[in-house]
Structure formats: structure tokens, C-alpha cells
Image 1: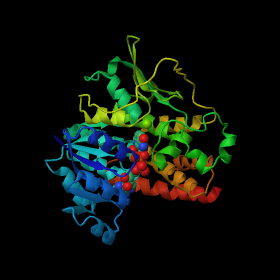
Image 2: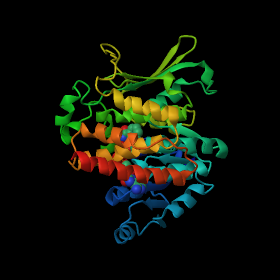
Image 3: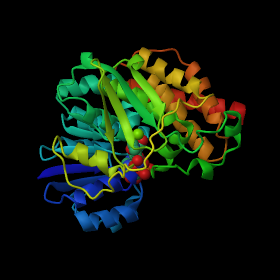
Image 4: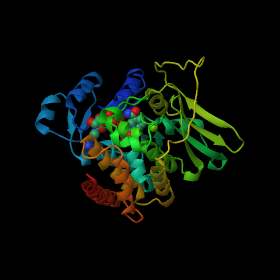
Length: 383
Ligand code: NAD
Ligand code: MG
């Protein structure tokens, strides 16, 4: 029986993770959950799974104490969360908080030498230069949950001889606007952007998928997780979202991982820690199925050039890229800027910072703060 701390339990990944745990009750004990502010949903989860610890990241204390009177420990400070993660009973931490807010949780788990299932790609993008060496030093095992990275993880032999990899091919659905010209993107609405053709996900990642910035984040995430240069990572559109990514080896073989688009599949793989866990899934019906592949739509190239520069130069550039995107996406959701402006905000914010080395986590938070201020300035200048 493995003890799990699930951070981001009330979100889309949290829900899929709970479904996998529910189907494998003998294997897992949900020792703790973490969430931002959705107390009603947390209450339901707590009633069903009876976790001993509940971390509330955006606490409304009166309310939360009332709701969780029955539970022995409500945690509402980062220190308490860190202590819980350090507990020797904790076997697995699932990092599924959305956005940069998830960085501390990822850091605590890696620093404590735990096995961490990373859905929160933003923490790897912003702080990969700190987190990956830390994982090595603390013997923390990072297992990717993001479907593309979990696919790559499944395609790679366990010994991970990087010299044998010719290239990694990350697939992208293309999102709802793949056939639109860059000019047409200025006119699309928030509602349109939230209609993802193949995946059902949280709001922020759904907008990232529509802009294709999600693929940029995933390129940087793959570069860090698999310690592979960006020149060996190709991105290709695959609108059916059945092949989640591929690895081509130096002998000409290409391995692909496939499933219908459902996050329970990569989550089950990650939670299995090398074993296959049974889950209910809709099998792929191959007869009559057409796979197609396309290049990245025209006009989005600049954003990928920036992402590749982040991989090549490293340091603070991942923090800047991530922060600029988070501020731009929030402004688009609040209707302060149009959809195409998201690209402008990222590009102009990114170009305002020279590359510098990250020495520690404090540096990450400092650059994040500065980039957010700069992104707000850019937004004021264009709105
Ligand atoms: P979501 O918006 O549905 O859920 C986010 C979760 O984080 C919620 O439980 C929320 O309460 C919690 N949260 C937010 N702010 C918090 C804070 N300050 N402290 C503690 N908890 C906080 O998001 P999601 O779609 O589940 O995505 C979660 C992460 O997984 C993101 O980083 C996303 O990029 C990544 N991811 C998601 C999917 C997907 O299919 N949804 C796929 C791949 C990767
Ligand atoms: Mg993904």
C-alpha cells in the first residue's frame, strides 16, 4: 500500500487521479490532499477517501475549519505542507496544482527525496535548472504525468541511454484554432478558446493549448526531464490525439505510445511505478481510424523560436517565458487583451530580459515577480 499526497486534488488532473486510485483501492492510501479554494469539492473527496491531511492553499479559514471539522489536520501554511511531504510515511507526491503556484509543492517533494508525479509542467519550465539537479542530489524520482512526457517515458528503455535517441517527436492536437491564420486569431472569443477538440482540462491549460504555448512549455519540459537538446525534439500536429508522443532511436526504430485521449492512462502508468495498473478504458478501434500529421500552423513560429531559445540558454528565461504567458492568459480571460495579444505580451516581455543564471529558488521567485510586472506594462501599452 502506497501513501499518496495529491496536490491539486479538486482540479481536472486531481479528478482523473482519484478515478485511478478508486479503481485500485488496495494499492493506494490517500494520505493527504491539497487544493486552492474549492472547498465543496474537497469536502466530497474527504468524505469518500478520508485523507488525514488537507492543505488549503488559498485559505478562507473560518469556512474551511467549519467544513473540515472532522479531519484532524488542516494545513494552511507552506511550512506545514513541507513538513507533511517530508514525513517518512509519504511514498508518492502528485504535483497537479495549476501554474507557477505549483512550484513550491514540486520543490518540497523533490527536496524531500520523494517519488514525484509531475503534472505541473510550469514548475519544470520555470525552475528546471534547479529542480533536475536537486532530484539527482536527493535521489528523488520524477515521473511525468503530462501525456506526451509520459508517452516518452514509456517509449524509453529503463536504462535511458540518451546516446541511442535520434529524436523525440512530441505530438500536438493543434487545439481549436489550428486552421486559422494568425490574423484571424485576433477575433476569436474566450468561449471558442475553451472548446478543446480532444481533451477536457482546466482553464489555463486549455487556453495554452489553443495558443500552442502548451506545446512550447512541453518542449522545454521534455528538454529538462529527459536532458535532451532541443535540436533533437520535433513537434508535429496530430489532430486525433491518439499517439501521445514518439521516440526514434539511432537504429531507425520509432516507438509510439497510444491511447484514446484520457489522462487516466498516463496517470495509471505513473502511479504503477513500473507495473501496469488495471483501469476501465475505451480501447482504440483501429479499423477505419485515420492517423494524420501536419506541421505547426503558420504564424506561430516565433513562439516556438522563443521556447527553443529557453532550452538553449536556460537560466532565468524559462521563468520569464512562463510568467509572461500566465499574465497574458489571465488578461485574455479577463478580456483585457485579445487572443493574438497573448503572443505579443510573451514576445515583448521575453525580449526585455537578458539571460542570467539561476542560483537558487529565491532567484526563480524574483525573476517571476519582475517578469509579471513587465508583462503588465506591456499589456497596458497595447490595451
Ligand atoms: P485545474 O485548474 O483543473 O486544477 C488546478 C488545481 O490546483 C485545483 O485543485 C486547484 O484548487 C489547485 N490550486 C490552484 N491554486 C492553488 C494554490 N495556490 N495552492 C494549492 N492548490 C491550488 O488544472 P488542471 O487542468 O488539473 O492542471 C493542473 C496541472 O496539470 C497544470 O500544471 C497543467 O498544465 C497540468 N496538466 C494538466 C492536464 C489536463 O489534462 N488537465 C494535462 C497535462 C498537464
Ligand atoms: Mg500535454
